[in-house]
Image (cartoon, rainbow, N blue to C red; front, side):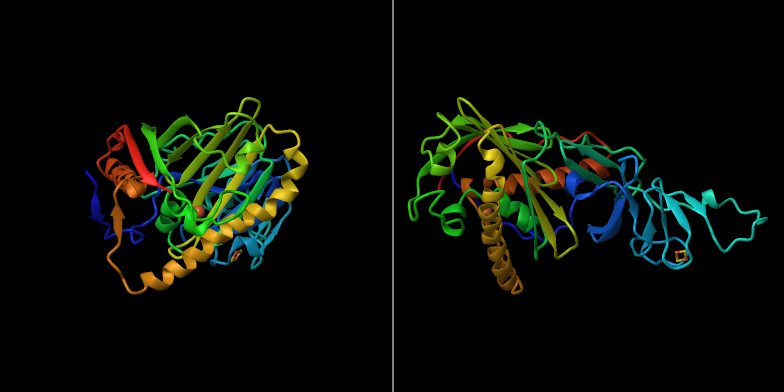
Amino acid sequence: MGTLGHAPDLGAAEPLRDVWYYVLPSARLPAGTAHRQMILGEPVLVGRDRQGQAFALRDVCPHRGVPLSCGRFDGEAIACGYHGWRFDAQGVCREIPALPEDARWDVSKIRVPTYPLHEQGGNLWIYMPGPGFSGAPLLPPPPTPWGMPQLYEGMVFPCPVDHAVIGLMDPAHGPFVHRVWWWRSPGQLNEKAKDFVPIPYGFAMTRHRLQRVSLGYRLLGRHPEVEITFQLPGIRVETVFTESHRLVNLTAITPLSDTETQIHTVFYWTVPWLGWAGVWLRPFVREFLAQDRRLAVKQQEGLRFLPHLMLVDDADAQARWYLQLKSEYRRALQENRPFANPVLPKTLRWRS
Ligand code: FES
Ligand SMILES: [Fe+2]
């Protein structure tokens, strides 16, 4: 039986809180630097101290509201650009230059809110707390593939997070949006049947042998097999196994604001000759993202007219699961109970 359903809140729902979002690759945050990053509409100062420890503070000075990122960071503390108050990486005030020597002020009582960070495998994740945050994340940080990333690309899409996530897991747009000679021949649609199972906070397309092997995969080795996992809030990991190699593509989606979403895509591989081909691959990865982005721009033009959106049959089942996972996560938090994964094992069939 097919499923035809309207999806009225698609794209209108608030992004999740109390989850981990990708911030940036570790390599983009050298020791002694700090910069501003908007996440969920909140200004965050992401930095790395001289010892190499990453930190994240709310990018608003508690004195008179100037962004701390407008100040100076010396690798240990950030001095606000307005009156020079100094805050360390834990957000604790260390100095108020205007106070006389003998002032009886415990400046360390003044604090800037901090955010939990997790750094592993060359990726930096931030935990965006919800109301009533106890100080400890409710969710383990996302697992990272082995080693260090060989290739990273990021792109900002002018759309709310849900449309970006749904586009990411949409199996039916490939032949229409990603028409490139090196990936597949144009115009051909093939019948697909894939097994899906629930995993913690998400679902997985189980590991399977590819029926048709495109040129991109053929280059990796013989008998490619693929596994794709998805988990909240918007983390997709595609692993390609061949007889000799492995290639992992981690894509993570971070809502910057209600209208802007950043797509991060990171590649890991064990193919030696791909090592130097990273530079050569980058334009292809960028073009792939740009194809999705162009579509997202066009989609926003149509969404202004508030159409009734649809999720149709198995081709849109993953989108439906995403919305169900998200609302279950939110309900479980509100009701203060464990998360119960709404996804059941299923074989999905579609043409793409
Ligand atoms: S506003 Fe930051 S020190 Fe005054
Ligand atoms: Fe796409």
